[in-house]
Length: 226
Image (cartoon, rainbow, N blue to C red; front, top):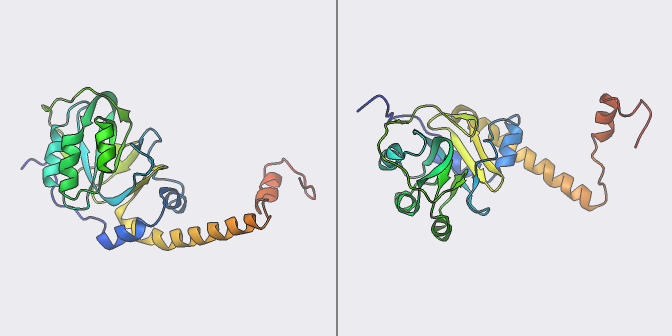
């Protein structure tokens, strides 16, 4: 098999995926230093859609889905197809037939920096799809690409096996070797935010850091307050 297809790579573990799936993409982005979130052009086909799993990376020529078909054939249950479609919106790379196959094979979902079609049928399937939009044009199936290699998707480098968590806010990529270390930070972040929301509910609406930040920015002088 060509070196363009990497079949063997380490994936983030299923146990870690289950734990990470408890968190919003925004929480993971915050504890990852506000890095790793794909460009906002890649959004859920429907806001309720969400997914978590290891990335199976696919690099394609804009408008050609040959290698996506190959990736579906090679995918393992729980994988997330992450496709660098170069942001092209002139033709859909996937539709109902391919999404049905993905669902049947236990693929966790699809992230594509490109367009899809048959959006109403995919909605009825409730299969998680994140894309830059839709287009009724179909793709070609002629051009070689790569599977399992590093790609750029939504402006973020993705390696095969990295952790992907996506929801209504967008798509978060966590490097495989960092995923486990972020979970305790995510738990603390959730606890801190829950406590802060409770304080706001009791009337303490002013951000505790605001005065210091305004002084540091020169908006307030020492001793001044809003």
